[in-house]
Length: 381
Image (cartoon, rainbow, N blue to C red; front, side, top):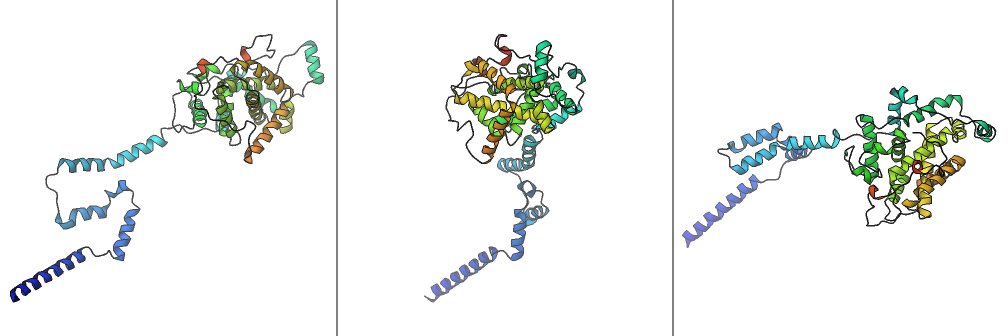
C-alpha cells in the first residue's frame, strides 16, 4: 500500500511538472511580443518571405536545418517564390496595358495642335446661295457668325473632314472610351471586330460608317459619354436602341445626327446662339445632344421602328434648322430634371430578355440615303 502511494505520488508530481513545462512553453505573449506581431500584420504577404526577422527565426529556431526535401515541400516553395511575380504581372495587366480613357477636351486639343491644312482646304464654311435664295436669306435669314468665331467654326468643319486612323493612338483611345462607357467594360477591345456592330455600327470597322461626318461623329459620341450631364442620357438612348421592337443602330443614328448638325452650322442656323454665347464648339455639342434627345423622345413616344428612320431623320432635320433654340431649351429642362433625380423624358426602360438583333439584320435609312425628292439638304461628301 505504501509502495503504491509512493508510486502514485511520484506519477502525480511528474504530471504536474509536465503541465508546468507545457504552460511555460505556451505562455501568453508579452506586450513586446504583441507589438512585434502587430508589426507583421502590416507587411504584404509577398514581402514576408524576405523579411530579415522572419528569416533569422526560421533559420535559428531549434537549430533545425532541412535535409532532403520532399516533392511536396519543393512544390510549396516554388509556389511561394511565385507570389511576387504573380502580383506584379496581374497589376501590370490591369493598369499599364489598358488604354486610358480620354476626355473630350483632350481629344479636341489633339486636333487643335496637329496640322489639318490639307483637310481645311476641303471645307465649305457656308452654303452658296444665288439669286432669290441669296436675297431671301439676306433679308429674313439668321445673322452671320461673328468674325472672331469663324476660325472655331472652321475647325469643327475641318474635323468633320478627317478620317478615322486606327494607327493614331488618340483615335484609338477615343474608340476605346466610347466602347467602355457604353458597354461598362473595363478592358480594351479590338479596333476592328464584330463587337462594334453591338454598338450600332454597320460593320466591323467603324471608319466605314463616318461618311459625311468624319471624326466629328466620334467626337460627338465622346462628348455624350464623357460629360457627366449627358452620360445618363446616352445610356438611356443606347438602351432604347436595343429594344426588341424599336431597335435601331445607335452609333449610325448618332452619325446621321452629326450630319444634321454640320448642315445646320453651314446654313448659319446656329449663328445666333453662337454669337450670344461667343462660342461655337460648346453650342455645336449641346445642339447635337439636344437633337439626339428629341429623336429618342419621338422614337419612343410615337412607337417608331427602323422602317421609319429615314422619315424621322428628315423631320428632325427640318425642326433642327428651324428651331435650334427650342431644342436647346428642351435639353436644358431634361438635364435639370435628371440632376434632381426626376424621371426623364424617355421614361423608365422596360428590360426585355430578347437580345437586340445584329445591325446587319436591320435596314436603316439615313439622311444620306433618302432620294433627292425627299432630301433637299446639301451634304458634305
